[in-house]
Image (cartoon, rainbow, N blue to C red; front, side, top):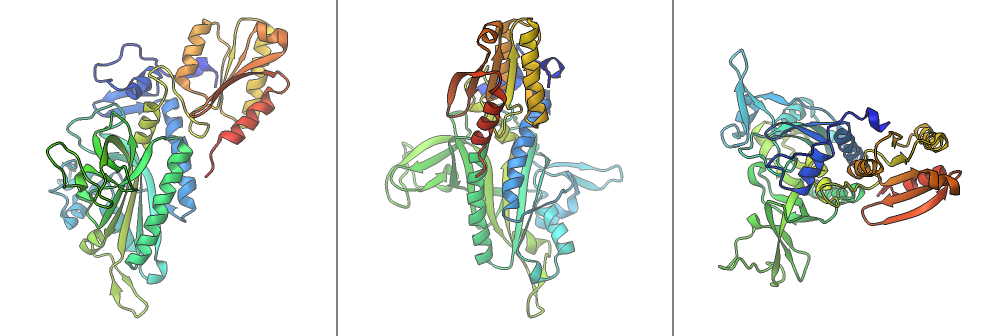
Amino acid sequence: MRIEHLFIKRTKELPSDATTSGHKLALKGGYVHQTGAGLYTYSSLGLSLLLNIEKVIREELSKLNCQEILMPMVSPATFWKETGRFDTVDILLKFKTRAGADAVLNPTHEEIISDYVRSTLQSYKQLPFCLYQIQTKYRDELRARAGLIRTREFMMKDAYSFHTDWESLNEFYDKMLEVYKVIYKRLGLNNVVDILAPTGDMGGKVSHEFQMITDIGEDTIYICEGCDYRANKEVLTDKDADDILICPKCGKKLQKLRGVEVGNIFQLGDKYTSAMNVSYMDEEGKKQTPIMGCYGIGVSRTLACLLEQSEDESKAVFNMTVAPYKVHIISIGEDEKVQGLANDLYEELNSAGIPAIIDTTGDRVGSKFANADLIGAPIRAIISPKNLEKNVFEMKYSGLSTEYESEISTSNIFNKIKAIIKNEIITD
């Protein structure tokens, strides 16, 4: 991509509700445009981040033999009435079709997946299995906040597993918990912990949340100072007037922190399968009800958290896996040889399938560097008349845990960049 072709808007005058650094960065960097309260249009930069996040999720879920499907955003209200949630879920956006039928804009898909499975599942031989989708959802939040952290419309990965018994569900649940850890590691999302959580509107037996510890979080979480116990405040009741909690596992003090929920997993049991008459025939030819697990990741919220952990509102920092562009090439001055070397490197990277952006415009150097900061490519390759005299590119690498500068010969810069990318992309 040539930077002059990048169709985005840099927002200098930020709205009053842009109170977090990540929200400011999203607007200043042109990652999103606010279409309405809690509603955002993603630019090519923002969409690239979303797609890179989705790619990691798909790769990891494939290791558990999860199958991707796609369910509708809108569903008949009859499914929600079957489970009794039509009148109890306050974020449910309800409306009537022109034919007068009640309908729902789905905030989650337990009912819809149960309807699909009951139409397809027949025998115990088909179990266990896990189906997932990555799709837009809508929740009728009274108050959107913190930019992309709490929106009304958002992207989400939701997976649903079906089993014959609790032993099978427990085994898969534990595997999914570990897969989530790998996903967040690969994405470069720091300070994420899994904690015990309330089951809430979802219901079920056991639930875990994945929380990114941050001061802007709206959830209160507690982490034991003496053991591995971690929990959401909502699952703890034993507290004194000073809000000091004691670990129910080892008796030591719990540390109070704030967090943003980026994922959750539930052992739902038969709450939905029983209510919606999902069944299969067992080995003896008897009708049985399968039990379910549910596993969600907020894709757009994960994007928001990646922006929140960047250096500041003027500099995006992404790892090599999620960055929209891996390399940002900058030429300084109008010397034809300088421009030629920049363009040659750009063409080499394109031919190798390495996403790169190039700035050979006549803009001021400071403006070029400021744009590069907002775009957040981990590798920056700079060529100038001064560099040309030494026959080198000035290369800067900025990752989540490493930062360095070096001078690389013009003949070796391409191979050096390839080697860095190979080493920096996390695969497990």
